[in-house]
Length: 252
Ligand SMILES: C[S@@+](CC[C@H](N)C(=O)[O-])C[C@H]1O[C@@H](n2cnc3c(N)ncnc32)[C@H](O)[C@@H]1O
Image 1 (cartoon, rainbow, N blue to C red):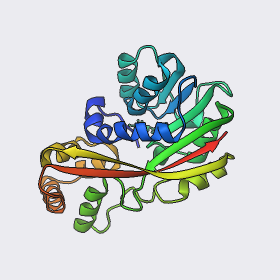
Image 2: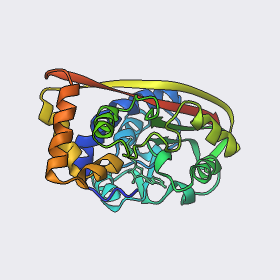
Image 3: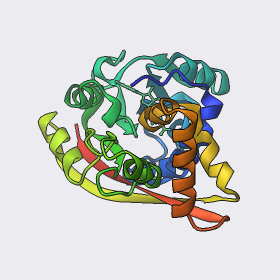
Image 4: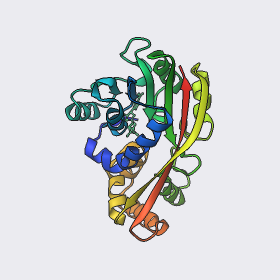
C-alpha cells in the first residue's frame, strides 16, 4: 500500500483520528521528557507533533517511505531528523533511541516482524518498542462503519480486518516473533466530532489507504450507493465517530 497522497488530504481523512490517538499512544508508550524517540511511519506527523511537544525537536526522529509525507513534515518541522525510509530497513545505528513507536503502520509493513525487529535494533536494550493498529477485525476502526456499508452492497469486499495487528492479540504475537520481551497490550480509544455528514464523507473520496482505493475504484453509481448506505447508518449531524486501536508495548 503506498501513500502517495497530499498531506492535507491525509489529515482530513485519517489525521483527524490519528492526532488524538497520538496523545493516548505516547502516554501508553511512556514517552516523557529526556528521552530520544523514533516515529516509524510518521506520515505527515500526527504522532511526531506530540513527540516534539513532549521531548523537543532535537530528541525526535521520523521515517516514512512516502515522499510527499516526508517533504511536508520536513518543511513543517525543519529541526526534526526526518528521513525517507521503511521500518524494515531503518537508517540508524543500533541502540540510537530510548523508544521506537509505530502508529497505524504495522498493517502496512511488507514484513511486520522484520519491521518490529528493526525498531528493536535501533532502540537501546530495555528501551520501548510500541505499535498500534485500528481494531478492524472487531469493528472498532473509525473506518468500520464505511467498510460495513461497503460489505452490505458487495459481500466479496476485502476490508482491512485480515491485516497484521488488526485483531486482538496479534500485535503481541508479532512482537514475540520479533524477539521482544515483556509485552503489554491495551485498547486505545478516541472520539472525533463531525458537524455535517459531508465533513465526514468527503475525505473518503480522496483515494487514501485501502478504503479510499476501494471507493476510488467504484463507478459513480456505486459511490452514491455507498454514500447513501453510510448516511443511513449514521445518526443525524452533528455526530461523533469513535475509533479503537490495539496497542502493544514491549522491551527491546
Ligand atoms: C495510516 S498512515 C499512519 C501515519 C501516522 N503514523 C499517523 O498516525 O497518522 C500509515 C503510514 O505508514 C507508512 N508506511 C507504509 N509502509 C511502511 C513501512 N514499511 N515502513 C514504515 N512506514 C510505512 C505510510 O507511508 C503511511 O505514512
